[in-house]
Length: 95
Image (cartoon, rainbow, N blue to C red; front, side, top):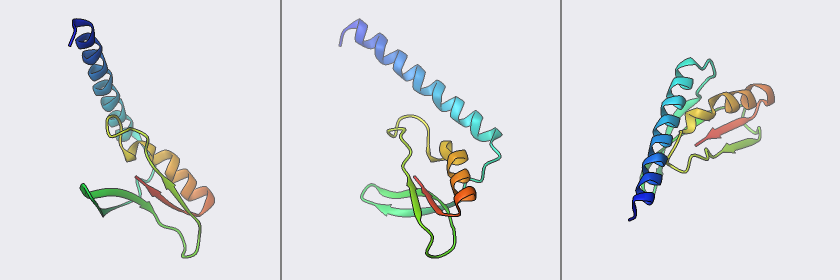
């Protein structure tokens, strides 16, 4: 690996760590409901989902967090998911 590639890798990791710190800070100050945490089996072990339950028979919205398993987490979308749940009265499954 060249020195330039090492610099890019180091910058990328710095950025990822900074984004994680920002996400954590935002979560500390959120007033949004995070939903009910549940575990589901996956081929990689137990996975976490956040469920915003509505009345039986209501539509379901699946939110798949786009962090690529590198930055952020499902809780980062809590404000968005909580708003969908409250304003539309639908089930929201947040992963």
